Image 1 (tube, rainbow, N blue to C red):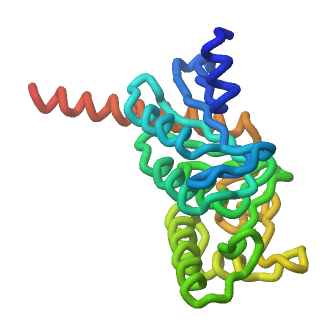
Image 2: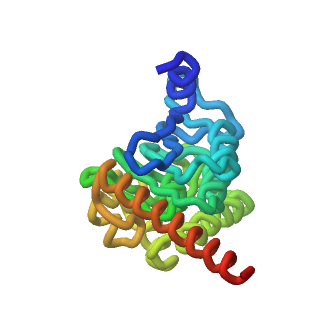
Length: 235
C-alpha cells in the first residue's frame, strides 16, 4: 500500500473498496471510540472527529466515481450535536449507504447507525438507548433540563424517521431502568435491535457488502433505464 494511502487509513479510518469484481468503488469509513465534537477529548481516549468525517462524506456525494458508502460503527457515544450533524450528512447522501455495527453503537451512535439505508448488526453487538445527560449526572436546573429535553427529542425524532421504531417505544426504552444501578436506558443485543426496528438484519461484513453491491447494481439499472427512456423520447 502506498505511504499516502496507509497514512489516510491510520488517521481517518478511510479506505476504498474496489476489488469486488463488480466494478464498484465503495468508500469505507469507520466511526469508533468517542464522537469528538466541539470539545477535545482526553489524549488517551480513542475518538472519531466529526470535522474529519464531514468532508469525507461530502466527497462521497460529489465524486461520481464513488458508488456507495460502507460505515463500520463501534462507538460508546459522545457529542450529541455533532453526532446528529454526522447522521444528517449520512442520510442526505443520494448514494447507497450501509452500516455495520460490530461491537457497540451506544447513545448518539444509535441515530448514526440508523442514518444508513441499511443497518446490519453483529450477533453480539449492542445498541444502548439512554437519556441525554452530562457526564452521567442528571441536572436538576429547569433551564438545563429543558435544553437536554430538546436535544433528546431531536434524537428521538431522527431515530424514528430513519428506522422502523416508534417514537413512544424509543422513549420507553430510553427511560427504562438499565442494568446499572445509576443508569437508565435499554441495551439491545444483536437480534433484539432488529426486533426493536433499529437494525435491518443480524450479520457481518459479508452480508453488509452483499446488500451494498446489490443496491448499487439496482441504482445503476434504474439510472440506465431512465437514460434509455429519455433517449427514446428524443427520437
